[in-house]
Image (cartoon, rainbow, N blue to C red; front, side, top):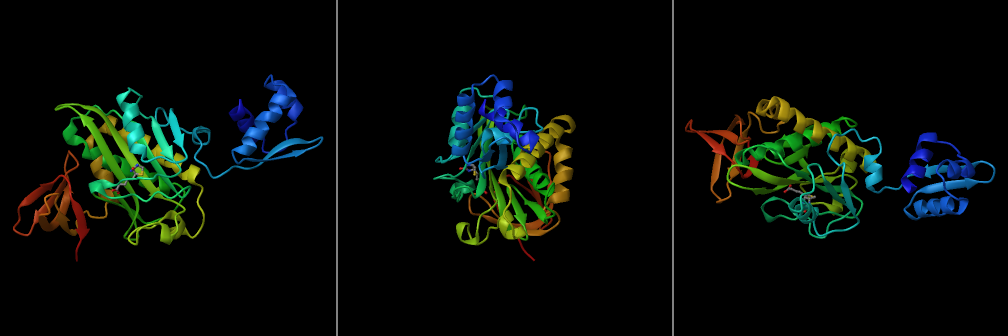
Length: 319
Ligand code: BTN
């Protein structure tokens, strides 16, 4: 009911008679008043003027599920959203839900994380109300060997989502970073539950620095705020990203691997460049990035001419 009142106030954009709205929604004046008070308690600024009624003045900077759902144009992503003020990591919650059978597209988001994690055991700093920290449950019907494609398609979705509103020089750094001006803006972590030939589910965890200041993130990172010099509406970017992730996921299902490969080439930071890769066993390989293959692996032409297929590692551009 609270959300219905809210949506009505949003739609109208001007004063609404409390009495009329209460009547329309079948509420007593007291019950209506209580909902207005609850909304105020959640941070909504609502003015009340005698003879005129109620008007929504300000929406709080919170990732409330009903704010994300408001006019969100998706078929399955974020149809179910779990929202937290503070969690250890959204990955753990999403994992538990996926185990319990929650559907594809279920979203877990938090305003802050105590133990946000990145790839290779790294920490993902997640200060309160400053970024987007979320995990999505996916159940792709692909071989576990192709899991790298899911992280690539998510990167494409993030870039396209941000680009809808902001003209920024964004690129994708294989396997899972979004860069702007050579600095890391967002990262993706995937956790997989699979059998030999099928994926049960994958948790795609995304961290994006939105309104983060310099001192709140590592020196090699950046944020939308730092790039654009203004405070950003987190809900708006979030919705754009969710819609674009779903769009790329559906296009992948329809068009296959080539959809991801061609988009990766278009947005890639590394395509054609000379790189140094630190492999998980600490071995270092150098060469030129030829492409990615049908499984999302990086194809590197080493100086001897041999092409090496890289499944995971830390990549650095060299000149
Ligand atoms: C990386 O760049 O290494 C990946 C970073 C992923 C961070 C996100 S924030 C939401 C989700 N919860 C986590 O603990 N990690 C991911």
